[in-house]
Length: 480
Image 1 (cartoon, helix red, strand yellow):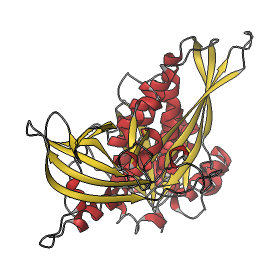
Image 2 (spheres, one colour):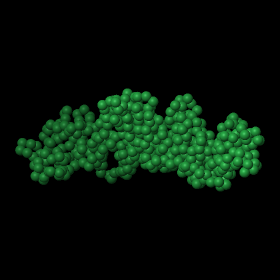
Image 3 (tube, helix red, strand yellow):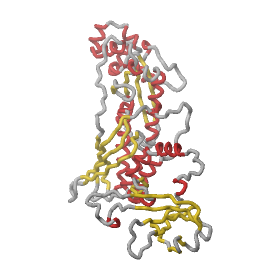
Image 4 (spheres, one colour):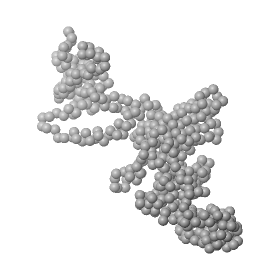
């Protein structure tokens, strides 16, 4: 005994009726249903799903039908339309379809959800619809009435197709359907209703393609990381035939609202050289995703995340302001404080920002140990504010001077860097001419005449030049 589900999805609001015609709604429903079973077929106005092999995976028929309905409603809600999903179950595909059609003709609160197969009306069987008038006049009002008639007479009067449909409904004849299959890569083209001359106006067509792409992702249980939008220009103009835009995200996603916002930001900065008559959308990079229910490792109910994540905010700001205007710091393998980090475009450093937080927290937690008596922790000497460039200080005797006399509080903290030889450099090159010159410093904490705490280092010169002091003092930072 097999288990079938028949689905019918309809748009209940006027908004989106033009974009979501019945064929588009049926295609989206079938694509999403492929995430629950590989045996999905289209028949007339319904989507038929053989869920026999998926019942155990989803926890039974009731759980599977609820999850499928919730996913369909969430998909259409994310595309700003309200949908109504009707579903019915049966031992064969035609029984499920018959019950679905019978439910469509019932008013709310009347009749049972399930109806006995023998009592299903004749109009719920597709093969009987051309003969409903004759069947009504001879007293055949349901499937049981037709089964009681002689088979030879029914075949001569109505054709063999009606008997085959009854046999398929009873399970004595195997179903023959063309199963729906999603392509390995998504690529679709959309003809626009009118020529578009401004790039931001392309978002209306792009959103329609994104909705189909989202349904394809749900069916393949994948997330999108990169896509290409191509617009086809009017051939009567002396311009290239197409223009394109690639959008990439750091984290794969099935909800494409963030991708739509990125597309809108990029299109707002484009200027079309000629009118556009059609659009093409192509998926470039996709990754398999786990089920959304298993995305969290917590056993407790958690609140739904509000707003965009930090990664999404960085991507949106980079698209709007330019990658060079949104920067993030990255650590460098150098012990000199002014060289410990560098600023790079944040969009290129998103992976380290999103994935490097946990190791950093782990290292910080490990370093929080109780210091040994008399030990000075090196990180405790680092100030809260560094100057863009160290400021050379005057010297009185052998002590630095900054806005008056200074009082030493702590130090020294010694730092020595031999300086790696880069490509094309030799050991005989002057230290100041090398890309990575050596450094020998002793850091101290001084208190100024006005009570401020200063971070000052003494540069120790191994072989000072004639007339130059052996120790040069520099102010590099302030403590809050």
